[in-house]
Image 1 (cartoon, rainbow, N blue to C red):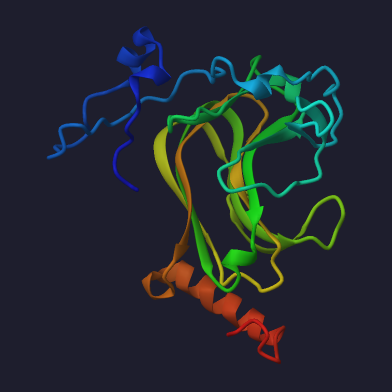
Image 2: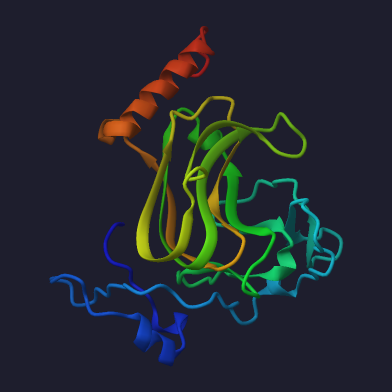
Length: 260
């Protein structure tokens, strides 16, 4: 995972590509390896993306979080109140506030995803997230990894959380990892991100992970991946987090229903 970024030429226009791809920062035995050192271009939508057809005129200046999703009646993408739906793995949800001020790119060919503002700044926020069924991952350790690059961002936050469906509008978080207190700011060349949670509580219903752009700028994400982790491979802070999670589960599970 933590090798150099491989970017397809189709991601960038030719004149941008030549300016953004630098010489390798180190000697390598892999002739296909390309090291990206400069910060990325502005986010630009992928041609023909059906989610870009959603009418965002109702987004307005409301602070209420909304989501772009398929309307069950019309079969078209619409903007509606965000009720944090659970979908199949691999489905990237677009949500946030003042969404008409943002652009998204979610290609199907494995190239980088991105979020950007149409203007220099926004008072809203936008997310690309996955929200999947947690049942297959209960009592397991999970890790979300990705490569991230930013261009003049106000704040970028990444997260990996698990929660229950105890509340109607937003699930109750029972396990969480992210950089909420120390968001990424400014322009950054590609760097790796790794977030770990677990052991996952046996009452977890949904797992959510992704990236948030708060305010202006552009954020790109490459090779996002969610995987289960062998507990024996954990070191340092990850091992302490696992031991703390296991102790919490035992305290709340005296009958052993979680299988610990």
